[in-house]
Length: 596
Image 1 (cartoon, rainbow, N blue to C red):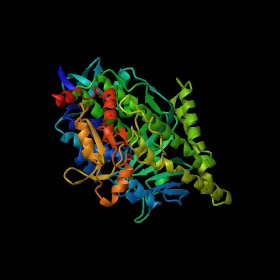
Image 2: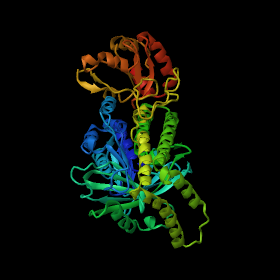
Image 3: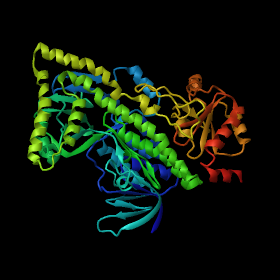
Image 4: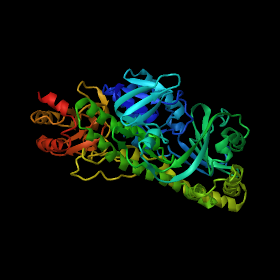
């Protein structure tokens, strides 16, 4: 039996990120992935700026590779509602219609929210795993966990039994490790979805605005189309029962539908798939040495793009804690703070994505087509006692119900005053959907609370969904700004955060450095000067961090604030009292080494 510090089961975005972050702490991992090919049928495509920050922290080389995949912002700014892709739009949202808003968002991070399909993203992440010597990446392998041992299996290979200190279930929505551990998922099924990934180079004429998303309402089809790079597209639609053709033979179904949606344009189907849209969270994120991240721990509707990004955040929260346990002698109970901190964030993301899903009804309610009625129909069909009923009968009834809904869109195609009024009512509801597509307040503004965060000021209040206001309130993400490092080079504040221990940011580094050095070492503290890279921005930089010219902000390795004061360096006594109370067992080995 081979000892292993960490085995990660699943090399999706969450599992890959965790392996790369742990490598930064010199922690080897075995990553087990049942698939051999990273080119997925695309699902997630929204990669927010916070995720890009985390990936850059995991590997600057990875950050550069992903930057090369990021399309220009002015090619992914249109969200459209229409009857087919060539028809006059019912209405649309232009995400670049407010240039001053874009300037504001650019100030929050070195990165902008991006659009990278999983078929492009995953090969890049897997290449990073292959290039990392501390990652033993096993494609085409499966993992079974019994007690505290893990058996790795692959065709034509002898089973390998390992005894890891920790096992990470990153094996997706249908996690076998979660199921084997008896951890359940709670929450409703909202819809069953089918999708097709296809290539259609002639779909949009040269110079025509190609929407990022097209919400299509046609008498024979209703759903959404996502435009990817290189003239690739994903088209999605709901269905009611697995007996329907879309679930039994996706290629046949979509060959019948695509000409309706895209006209006579030549297309090539790359893949088809089905999935279940749910709002579900695991009843626990940990059982002994097993920890759940990503879709294994939570599932959201796709409306809002929180799924992939939240899994990367899970990995970010967990990585430094695992490193503290495995490398610095921290108590195993530190890992319990993973769920304490992440669960409230996950619940808010789940609530917002579900809200977005049902808020789409404001546009389509005049048609009599709503996601609420779809949810009710899905639940009803799921409860019906259909055992023994032939699939062909079930499929026929489900198809009739589906057609009865989509047929309501015929009114949109008529050239009548009533049809024009209907289109106008739908168009008037479209601007209210912006929160679905612009969520900077959640992208950057999610915050933690718990035993590692100073609670004197109370929990960090929930901010606006769409608008982010930078803050150093304990629990929040430390704001981004460009400062000068010790060598006088311009760096983001995020790049100045110490990998291990805590980082104290202050505009008065000399006094704080002296006072910190004069106190007993509780947790390693690195003092960083908040010196604006641009002299003209000195005052605004001081204002951004909310502690004045003499105060300090203390930040942990994942970039979240744990403590702050607007008092001068004499407040170091209060800081050390807080650290002794909340952080004493986090870095005992490093503390003892520093005290020796």
